Image (cartoon, rainbow, N blue to C red; front, side, top):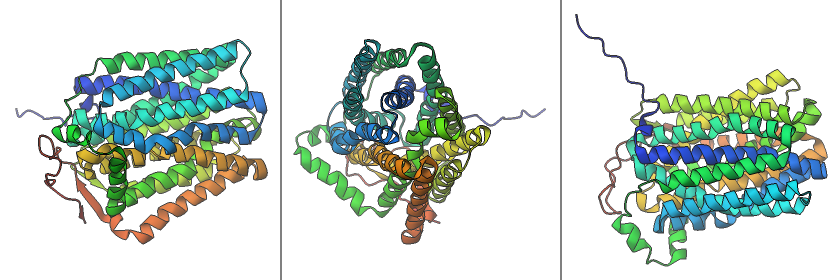
Length: 435
């Protein structure tokens, strides 16, 4: 009797690599802390000020350093030890969370403390993100890159499911101080796992780049993005929809209290639904066996994400808001994971840290979008503000489609990294093509 060969499930392929597994555990821990901070910081600020504008501004205070220092951090990741850059960032985050928790528990906390710690946490995040992103491709290679990035998204969004609910429960049970102490512990755990990683030795070209003028390295990164039209399109599709449409998360305390007539647990529930959708989307992408990356599915996902946010702003019923949260989360992850994969495959290894640091500027522009959304919400109300911002996001996506129609036909081979063991200027084995 002939044997039946069952298809292999590839969802968790990258976790078979020890160093990626440790990196992934650190991603879980830091992501949990970040999502708990979003709920806790927003709730604490609203308690102290009762201002929707302050919710947007404190989010912007965390995002501004990413704009100021993100590209510098990317150049540093291309020149020096990415692992140590990550360790220093995580230790600093742990200290900041414990400090803020102590201010709360002693009754000394003031709104300016939230602004200062948000700015410092954003500075740390600016140096953490490009190091973490480029370490992924360092330890798994191009052929498993989409799977690894999807699993990173699964970690991020699994934390999004649990983090807001845990933060809401902690706030209700023991106050915001308890939530911040737990966040400090999360960053400490991430540091322990990162220390255990055995990162590949720096390539000879990275050692040579360490002798180059620092700002010349930064200039080279921007020049590369400006020259490559597919990279430019990917950056527009990252920065545009995320900057404008993601601003809905900063207004969640207002939506929970004034539109849905709930409390911190309502806010946590909706954000957990967004996280559940994101987790499902990440696992779907991780399970795909692809030899090519495409432009069209990413564009469709971006449109569905922005459209879902627009619909969310129209909801006044909790179950519908939760359902739309699942839709938003799912399409957000599927499109951003494909975006990151294409960027890292198209960018040569020697410049990958700088390219990803420009992509990660979205982590800084999103809070700036949140600040604009907060001002609009103060004047027109939270639902109208989200309608305006998500409408702009859809406009950016359509602009890319109209001005760069070849991007929709983009087809990029996801081959093993042709540059491994080769000089930095060695041509790639295969180039992107249109279909």
